Length: 586
Image (tube, rainbow, N blue to C red; front, side, top):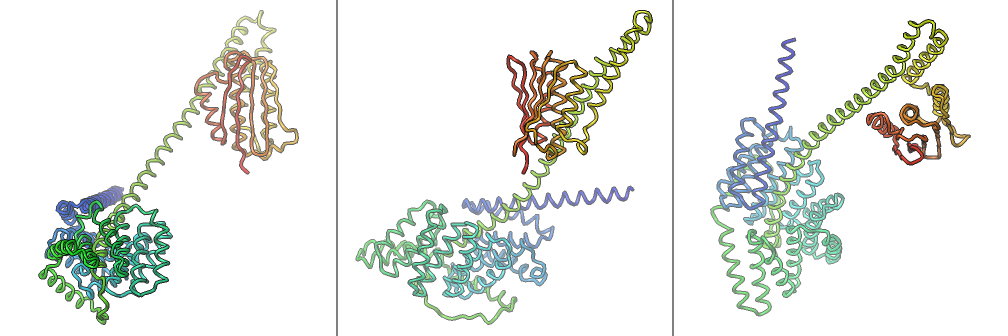
């Protein structure tokens, strides 16, 4: 016995520690992603390091991959590429093991897809087209294995954009079409607008004017449903690209200025660089040389800070190392048309980076919601059990109190009178049989009220009629019962409903007899196609059916609710009327 108890305690402690570990780790990761989304990357990095200190001793491979991937993003945003490469190195080393590939669950598949998508984004930023394609294909493979449709739609949209920017238009169209269909099924209009906008670019690059028109129509139908700033900026950028291709210079300049005036765009250097780099060309075509020169100067200054030779070389070395380890050769590396490449680089860098953060936040939020729903369900169940138990005990105590009063006020007092008569044999001899008969009738009535009626052999109409007749005889009052309509089939009333109405009738009629001074009591049972109505009236002057105790009134109300109905009591000058209306199920 002691061994069993110790084992049970050990299991409980292990479960508690595991739950605490998961909650702490999830909270830290979520906090880090929120700080990154707010632009506080230094703080995000510190929080992620604390989470990594928890995950590493526990050998949580999936969490270690996700944290290193996120820290790479934070460091890349801060411009510390050498440190970012170390974290990507750690994540990719774990992600490429046979054990990870063989045992990957849903969470692991999501982390792997996000990691490779981050790597593809970095290579697009640095204009390494072939390397970006390599990681984009790995990201697509892992994304297709994910069961979460919302996450899959977001991943495929960003992956399709990588293929588009690298010149693989057919693969881009396949990924983006799948993403658009998933997003529309789930009514994720920002994601659908992103995928549709990119498909405009794909169709334009394929010189398919019909497809361009079709995708523009689809995007215009959902544009009004989108409030997400990033999705709208990406959509405007695609329109800029198409306008410039067709030499609509004024339209393209207006769209670029619209993007540059958007709040928060200053924190997106690739977007700003792309705008100025294309605006100088548009101004030059219009002959506005001064404005063209100003825009070109701003673009050159931004380019110097974004593309650094040493960082590009370190990124290439990392790619060569893992291409050898993965042994995934035979990648087609062909030169394709690079017109508007910088435009697509800016779109990809902006949207993919933001979506990677959103994807990570989504995963963490879903886990937290599941835990909260489970805890809330347990609390609600416990509260419901307590309320039901309390109601049962109150009803039981109420019934006991009523029976005690019946026995004390009726049977006990009559027994005492009987004792007095027995002591005085001369004066009480003639009244003794009458008193004995009265006591017997009182005991029989209390016993009868305690026993539930047998609805198997009689319906609700017959049972109430019997009760009213016996009560009228015992109380010497006029008590009538009416059942409407005459040809009603009362056997269709469920036993549970019949029992509750019978108990309400007992309580209400008993209160009228004992407390109100009523001389005329009426009970009516009325059944229509979909309702059953119990009406009890009396001509008493003391609120009979409200009488007794508050517990009695509350018990009648609870019984009415248990039968699926509602109880109302109307006190007026001529007495009291009680109504119970029960809606019958078809």
